[in-house]
Image (tube, rainbow, N blue to C red; front, side):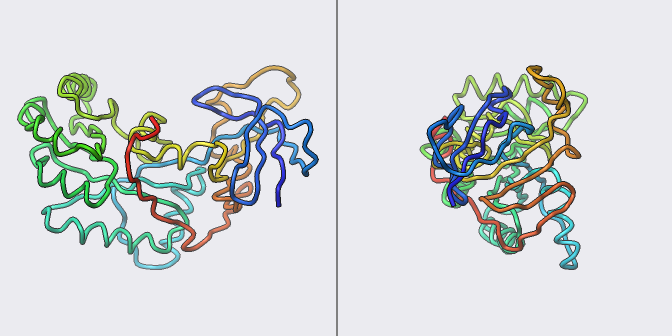
Length: 297
């Protein structure tokens, strides 16, 4: 069925824009400020604020012993917070075991309600040409580099790594080990990888929080996920306006975008949350294979 989500306030890169969406089942056909001449059924959305459903990063996957525990892991940590897509961080001990580690993660996620992709967590001392080539073959769209000081970064053979990354060019994301020195380490990180012309992200990834738009673009997750656009999937959150009686006054994003203020979460055209009720869809999730990170950047 084709219908219009009419006059919702959509968050686009941190700005609220009055927007209408023409949709058909799980797909967005068009996005405009208004569809005046269309006679499709309209869903009045002006009392709401909208965001794309969120992309979260999670550091590894837990050991789970029961179906209820599995369901609660996804419902409480992700669906309850408006997340429908995961970047799953994977750790490894040997390059030869990477295929096995990725396959184990896929097996764990086979019954997941969320879509997903993977990132590999790599100690700086283990960042090597063979490892980069392996991750390219596995189409892993991000490498999270763990380091405790600047010396570890300076020891990396950046020229060889740069050549090995090309042409897939998975961005490198920093994971400084020392929280007390994090700002200094991140500044050094950005200076070094910029000088070496390495595709990278400046900041570390927050866990179980919306992944920044910059990371979505550089990893190639954008525009497939975390972005509402013509031709894209219908995955979004609706939030209540908390100032129903204040005409013409825009509300602060931090005031609106709170977990307990989510009214509806939709994933690929299907309801997965209404108020506090979760509609858990087992095995609804799919792996997103990214053929070229940052292609649309």
